[in-house]
Length: 246
Image (cartoon, rainbow, N blue to C red):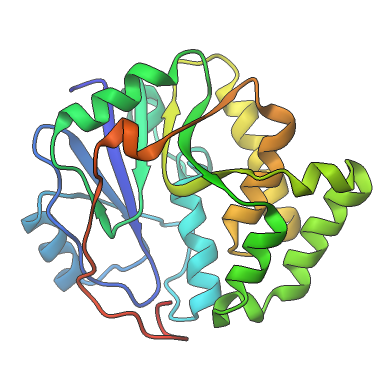
């Protein structure tokens, strides 16, 4: 599948990676510049690309925000790559997935490519509102510390859209995003997303993206994750540590 690349990200205190899927160019975007991490990643089949515009941090909230530079393809626009080095120029599709997930085979990815159609991005579908997501995320320290920013994010949409706009229960699962780089206008779409990301500057992307999504339903597609993937794998190589990596 030469027209598609996989990307994931390692920032903050995470250090371990699952094996990369064979047959697909797989990149890990990272702020971890140690030789130990690089060697381990390459042994697992990953191509290491450094987020050179970011300093490595062990601060959980800041590291969580840094990870969005990979998820939202900000790195591919921000970094001073030659044109041939930019992933958006090299691949028709770029599939981001959280580093705790893995695919059992190429057919799972092909299923997702088949449904992206003429959209900028396709994501899994969940059924909760941004208010429900807000209360769910308050169980974790990395969100409590920026609660006011998350509330500002929601309040801005209530004021500029409507209350009903924020109560819809169709939401996106941010664990994976398939970007369609063949779609004209993707750079501007990413710029709009980056603008809102930096405007509110908090790591709760399931609030931010789901609000961003509502008036762009004609260019963002949500799909039933289980139907498309048929059982996406998940394995945690490092234990969750509240306040350290989760």
